Image (tube, rainbow, N blue to C red):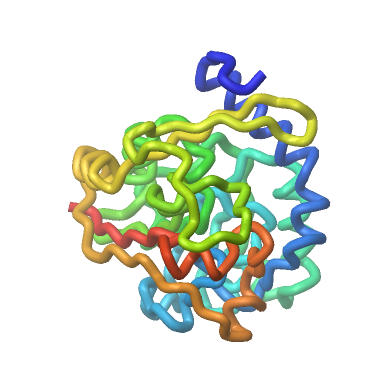
Length: 267
C-alpha cells in the first residue's frame, strides 16, 4: 500500500515494471514529437531556449530517454546520441521509432542502452560532450549517485541540461478541483511522496528542494550556469512537442511553475 517502506532497489523494480506495463498507453496518449526537443508540459522547447547550443558533431547522452523522441530530434539536428533507459519496452518503442523516423545515415548516429541511471555500468566513461534529460529525474531515488555517475560519463569540457517537475508544483494537490488559486497539499520540505499505479504498485517519488539540487550537483563536480522556471505557453510548437495539458493544467501553471530546468557544467 502507499506509504509502505521499501528499499530503493525494490522501488526501482516497481518503476521498471510500471513503465513496461504502461509504455503503450503513455505513448499513444501523449504522441510526443520526434521533431522537437522538449523540456516539459506546455514549456518552451530547445528551439526557443537554445540551452544545448549547436549540437552538430556532438556526442549526447539522453538519461531516461523513454520512447527516444528527444534523442531522435537531436540526431536530426546533427548529433550522435545514446539513449539510456531502464524500461526495455520503452527502448523497444524507441528503436522502432528511430527506424521509422531516421534515414540510414542518421540511424548510424543513434543507439539505445538499457540501464539503471543510478548505475550505468554499460555506459562508457568520459564519452559525451552533453548530458540531457527531460522529465525523467522525477523517478530517481538517489540523486547524489545519479549526478556522480553522469559526471563520470561526460568529458572534462562537458555539461548537463535537465528538466524535472518543479518541487514547488509538487506541493499542490494533484487532484485539481478547478479552484484558483490552487490548493497546497504537501510541505515543500517533505522531500518524498507516494502513490499507487494502475496495478496497485506503491511507488515513491523523491522530491529534492532547489537547495538540495544545487548541493548534489556541486558535490558531484558540477557548477550551475542557468536555472529556468518557464512560464506556460500555449504555442502550437510546445503542444506538438509534448501535450500534457490534462495532467498539468495551464491555469494552475500560471500560479506555480511546473518545470525546473538546470544547465550545469563540469568543474
